[in-house]
Image (cartoon, rainbow, N blue to C red; front, side):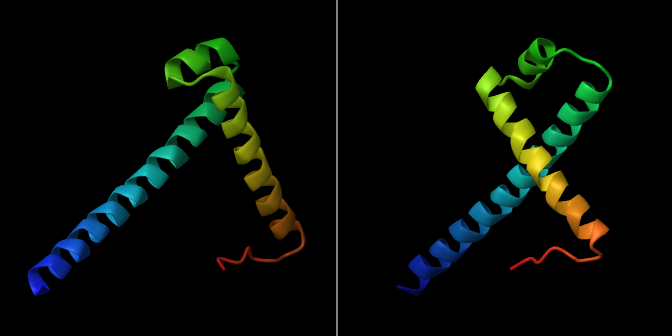
Length: 84
């Protein structure tokens, strides 16, 4: 039984590590998307380069914009966003 639990722990740790890598990759993609848009790249070009559909790209842009709005409001009101 102890060996099976070790396997569960190892698999869970691997999954958590991969999720952290995915989070970092998604943040890097969002940053690159915003940079490309700011440089004037067309949405069609960005969609192809990012291998996203137009609705997927729009969703990422909306999510990123909402996150930025929350962060900007926190800075304006001198609050720090809660992690909880």
